[in-house]
Image (cartoon, rainbow, N blue to C red; front, side):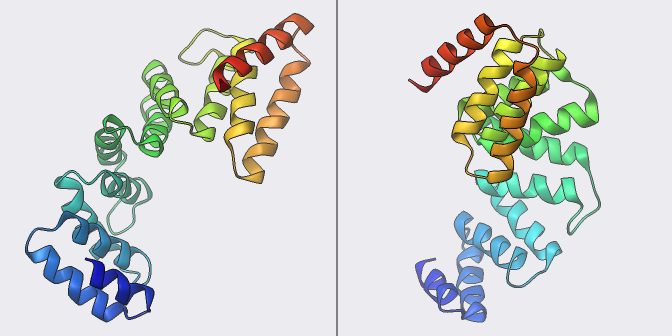
Length: 202
């Protein structure tokens, strides 16, 4: 594996491919994942990427499970299959992957209308610090989707999304949402939201 990584870093992709294929043949889960990564990126072959990601995912590689879910969700190297995407995201979600939990929650909401189950997975993802999940929770609290309407908790979710996000677009979305929220909230509700935010950060 390590030799392959050195070759990869040096841009010797054919040598990296050869090393990882040898390791894959003797059952290396990590080699299967790296082959998927190589085909997904530099070699641009979605079918091969899906094949190796699936091989690694079947042996329990969590990031590979997320990647297989993405391939089925986007229809890369295969036809779009949201049910299969949900299946793979679920496996990784139970393995505490916040991205899988977020993607699973989004698909459950969009494809199946399972609002409560979707909210549950957004919460799990948010607990692991995913800013997009906090933003999704804020929307759920505003609309009462899968949960009771609660503007104070929506405000808290916006605050946490702003604090945790490293992406400018994401930060401005959460600030915008919070600003809109504050026009519908009392001074007491805003104060309570700020107190709850501090508790969450602690």
